[in-house]
Image: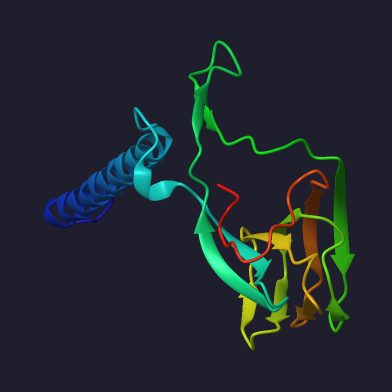
Length: 189
């Protein structure tokens, strides 16, 4: 405090205390916001909400062999205690997968008209896929989308492309024992 008037020292000390208090308040507020978000995002609902059944895109063929794309919902959820002592979870079991493949297609890859080899779920993990159907519909698939390929009885199937500059990575889960029913969209529930 050499040669510094006491009122200037007190003012500097008050500013430092105010800044310290402000930082502490901001820290506490940030902690509250982050903690509230984490707690809110980890709270599980007591039962499966009907509005969040999960959706998939069904590629199906009509009675003339023309392919279409329809957005559908999984609906046959059954509560199971699969992982004790964890809380029960909900499963929709529609068949046993006989083949699971991870596919990696580079930017610019093209799949001209073809049919899905067997009924299969395709889960998009990375990149963007563009699928084109016989009825003129085209659809972009993004990470998190689920596609059910069921066009085995169509005359041409569909086209598929890796869209953009990123590699397309998908998981293909094949169910050869499932029906190749024609003219019935959304039958996989």
